[in-house]
Length: 610
Image 1: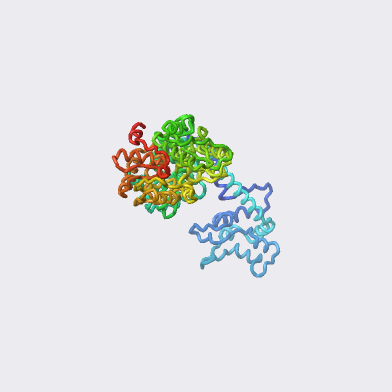
Image 2: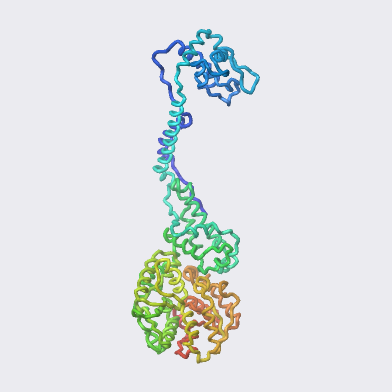
């Protein structure tokens, strides 16, 4: 990470000099606390002798009666001031027990004093040579009349200290506040951390750099660069935040992280499918998916994300309410195609208030001609069972998953509009055949607003209907299948069992179920999610190839999924590889086993057309 040095020209630096001069002016006042004495107009003989002789002696032994312990002169170990409380009391009352009296003081002045801790005696020859005993009496009489100024001197010195201190401190703050632009000569973006709650901020420091995430990261396995590993992304972002929110950076309002560092970090941040594998293997259980999405929101706010190839998806979703950039009138093209091809047993029902089930089709099944069969099979099953259901037709808009995964705040707008529309319909259950839509509505929408209905994947509804005996499998399929756990359905939502229970129930239709080596929370990501497919298609393709190979090793004839986006990527790679395995969605198996019309079409030709 590159750190930007603060550049200050001499011309700009001169603007700070007046502040420094004022600071230097007040500096002595802070540490000394001394005041100047004013000369009196009339001076008594005793005061004159005191000033001429005693003060000069005090100056030789220690200014102001304070010992100078830094000097080698042993005289600095005594306190020669006559104007102390004990001596003044003795001079005034002539009574101070056996410790001090006028005679003792006179002996001290004439003969000197024994230095504490030594065997030496300090004498004051100035007094003995220059003053007679009568003159010494005059000095002592003068000292006895002096008021005790210690409280006043202490108070004034404290006021000067505190006043000077706060003035000095105020000048420091004032100079920083008014001259900070001189110190921070470049206007660089500052990372916002408002997208993180306390837990996310704690997780930035929770990473122990153990490297377990590196071992399991599917993206790193295809592009072995340390900068794209979860631990490195956390470390880099943590350092950028600390650099910008350190006391030094906050105090001087300076930004030590330059644009180049953020650009490099952004490229590494978006080279991720947000599959959540790192979260499940992390010993500290850091919620990396939430962390990545929060960091992406920060990067987008700064104007550095998403990547160039990902930006059209975000723009299309904002403008057309779908990442495909298609008008709303095209959203029901799948229904018109099903009617034309006579694969729909009945047209889909447009939702009405009071309907129990809302079928949320999703953008991929609505707009991708290769995947419209998912919507058609789902509609046929719902109609065949005569359920009280409906769909939104042209009123349906994207769930906002693309915006959320890319870090765009417009997700909140789309989510709020959808929540309001869903709640007003008065539905009991929302079902969807898209894992991405399910995860977004089920887990992310409640952060925006309250949902007055249940959200379940279509596989869960199928299992409930099978349990209730409403679905009968009368048509044999005689195939061997394996199941791919979509990341949003599995790791993100914990929906592992219901799809498998539906497949197991299909054994009555001659469906044999075999598992791949990596399943459930350790399922290998196909690479389609998180914007990776758009931003780094070559990495996504390698990841998809690995997943197809996992399926081939089982000997299965069909690869099953419950996510149209996974279906799309896996199907394309199956054709590219020339694999003999067939790609199917779970609803297709159920529909065929129920004896409903087949929509099996030439996948290879349609994929090439797209």
